[in-house]
Amino acid sequence: MKFLCVECDRQMEFEERQLPGDGTLAAAFKCPACGRVVAMLTNPMETQLVASLGVKIGGRTLEEQPMETVRSMVATGREDAFAEQDGERGAGSGPIWSGEAQDRLSRVPSFVRGMVKRIYADYAKERGIAEITPAMMDAARSELGLEGM
Amino acid sequence: MHLRTYHELTEPDRSGLPEQIAAQRRRVAHRMASVGRVLVVLSGKGGVGKSFVTAGLARALAGAGRTTGVLDADFNGPTAPRLLRLPVASCTVRDDLIEPAVSPEGVRCFSMGLLLEDGNPLAFRGPQAEGHVWRGTLEASALREFLADVAWGELDDLLVDLPPGVQRFHELTDLLPTPPAVLAVTIPTPESHDAVRRAMRGAVERGAQLLGVVENMVGGGGAFSGTAGEDLSAEFGTPVLARISWHPAPSAWVELAGRL
Image 1 (cartoon, rainbow over the protein chains, first blue to last red):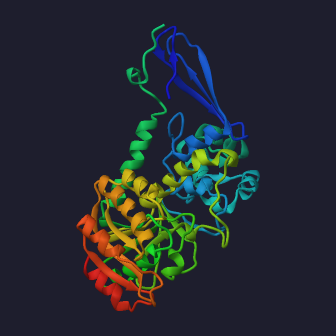
Image 2: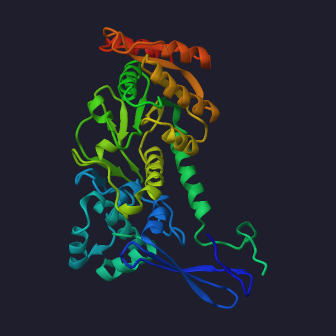
Image 3: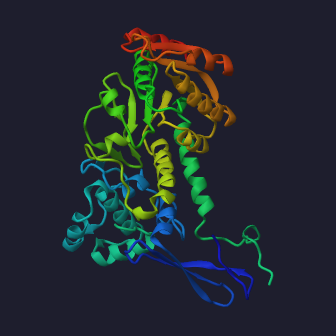
């Protein structure tokens, strides 16, 4: 799917993605010539179809996690299905988690919690963020397209 | 008004969805590069014992010294963990890969059955009302991740246990760099012959190599009678590799493994 600014005959560029949290998605595209911005709004079914492909509108900014689609989409997963073993990408000497961020992480279903923790830690490391807070989690969630995380 | 078409728009695209898909395919190809042979156990018909044959064959191959893996591609009715007597344990996530479970004979296996709550069906998050639109896509993605994200390591044989039908076979063939080899499983009946024949035809049309036919549930007082194995063998010019009785001796699997 691409967007064309008819007036300028230029392909519009991806600007920003937003996840309101109701299963829908909003993505803004801007014409590089005239600056006009349009938003693509997808309903929950359309959002889910794109997510089912394991791709991200706006591109990936972080490396894909192993079994990312299965772990983020399966609703009947066993709580202890996965055991995270921290390696190069694990927590190690990475960012610290604020108390509020830890509380929020603890509310993520355990089937996917380990992966979500790694994603936020990778996001923080890549940006030189020393402490993971709920505000940072919100920013990452929107930027990375982490619906339901 | 003249509008340029999709393919006429050549400016850089930050989403790069085709590139993301291509990267997924490369990850599968990279993982499969250390697999000697992908061998699909296919039927087209349910209840003929594909998973039973897969498990027996995998154990025999491992017993013969071949490094063997089993990918249980039946996401909605996974049976490999029980058939292979896999330990009940968490799957270890190490760096970018997930460790497979290992059977007492050394068969490496990954199955949806390792991930699901006991007794619960596979269910996905999302708008259930339109589930038919995206569920197939999601299961194809799960297959891709089972291929690409499991630490299969060096394998001589990766057996893929398919669910009934041919949809999963087509998804698998789309994902693999080259078409897999196919072992067709049937029971002796004419009804099974009809269903397996269609599946084998579909596999041939996708360029798969037929290794042969396994006729399962043979004998047993004639519970299932017919000549499906012979008929499929003659029609497709591929051998009947084994006739498996209702209670096969371990030697039956060893003989089958020796013919592959």
